[in-house]
Image 1: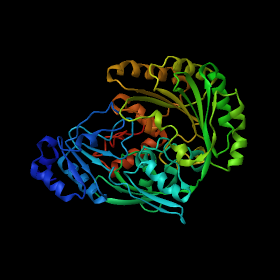
Image 2: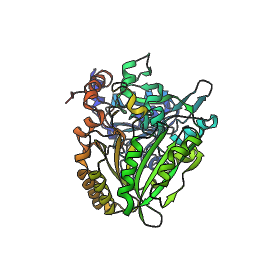
Image 3: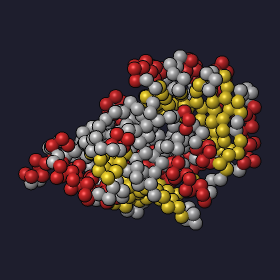
Length: 471
């Protein structure tokens, strides 16, 4: 490294001259925003209102060439670098403080090739964008259960969704990605080209570069049989035990999820949400026992368009709220664990907070353990404790409730955690990050991190430290 470059690499963003930033701005097809200009505050805000950081620069990229220029700029000047796709991740890693934030949200192009059953999406797309295009041809792939979630972020962490038991995770449906590496190289990554990196990005998060586009396999999905049944909190123990046994015996076409929520009338309930993506007649038959058990207080399960089902939970996750989550895959959903969840929800401090129990299995579990970097193939249930509330003055009360219930459920945890549900790294700790990637995969991911990002330029994520080794 020459002396000029060495000096530049140690400077902070505050030390950049107007000439340097103006040169970057002139070379972008997109926009370079600085604090105080119109649009800057809107661009730095993400879905979780607990995240309040101020980058020195925000590059609203128009294409892969802009991303290459920004990566090179951040590396040369030694700037913290963060990457925003959909901006929905609870950890808020999309926003750095005092560095360069790459904002991919203007990059929302989608191309569907229905005859080949593939679709390519730019990395700023949300699942609402993606589903609107693919459903025009009666096609879909596994996507997030909240339509405002970003396509890239969800997929790179694995990608749980309503179609996963039939078609696998989002990352299982990837054919190819384009990625800008720490060296500023744009690579095509798939099973034939850069195959080891292709393994890593399917579950390894944003540790290896900035993904600019993703190509997916899409599948015929028309109307689905979906909706929910609901039970009172007084009946929740029996209903959740029934859900557990019903889910374990379910066919691949059915993805069920149980959630403790507060109904609009203020009553606490257990809701069981379902998506059956096979024939409607068979879906009605399969779901009949669930709909007659109890009987439920509410039953709105019916044939509906897939995009309607995809937006079913969106009202429960509004932007601009304080969010604090804790999660773990479960070793078992035993009767004792169910008792803890029921009592924990009874003491919930917010009507907008919730508990969710997601059921995996099916195609997710049949994939080989080392097929992708996603490490938790054998988990049957995932517990997500969602704290959502409006007033920052109440943060301590709500975070204490989330942590307390999470700690009470640790005896039933597998020890693993879904990387997309992790909070801020400083709070979660290194052991939790390792648990997200899995002991069997972590060493392999570290070796690839040393190869593709030895200086850890891409560190504002659930970080794989290139200097670390498997535990």
